Image (cartoon, rainbow, N blue to C red; front, side):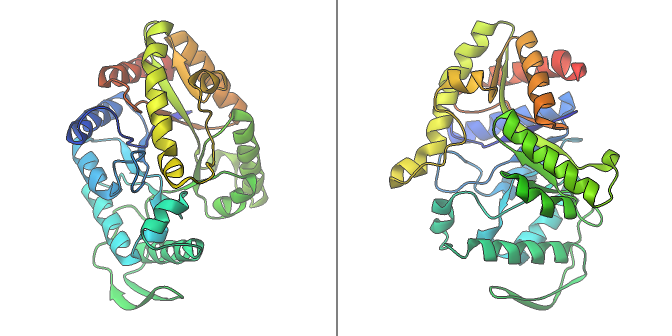
Length: 332
């Protein structure tokens, strides 16, 4: 089992510049604690995401960490110009000494894509941008002719440091999506109850086996959980409950603003989320035992923790990381 960190960079109570400073200090703690990777969401026009330019924040992450790998989860590719994205990916991989991980995605929110003038064609645009970027990462010039983008003999003078390219990630919500990800050897991340995640990981393993790949070479199967660890159960719950409420309000902000049907993946009630194992909050023993049960039930090999969300105090996030490192991660 490996451990990583997922971060929406959702708005808390502090000024935004202080939130950025605190988060970079927290990333230094992730680096020291031995987490595999830091995965940053991309959102626009919403308090759910204060890193609308993930590459800008990740450039700072590259300078504040030494071993920690990092990347977007995911790039909202349907709103990018592929050449600009390709060049920035190469820059980040070089700046970090080859620690970039690339999240591929169309974008989950039609409202946010609409801000950029992208509508029903988002899937087609995403597929073109994805194919252009992946081609460009392994070639010295870019030649592509598509419906939305055309390139002829564009020199690619910056190459990624990792070959053939940085590791790839994809957010999976349904078992049928595992065929494409297995065929392209892509790491996956998913949300949801452990039973739903298990249907996805079982299907990925089946697809992997069908392709003749050995089980020992499986990519990473990631699952997200809010995690707050404290010396006492009561302290952890008291800090996590209002933080979850604020995070949930940010999650639904645009949908409520537009009066649109809300695609709920998380319960609104904190106690319900905790009972379901989506929020793993409590003492060291409680969190350790619940994370073990969740990981085994889901069939994952990579657990992503959300240590910072809502108005959770920075001190509480740092304490959770320290206790994870000392008391919980060694038990896996």
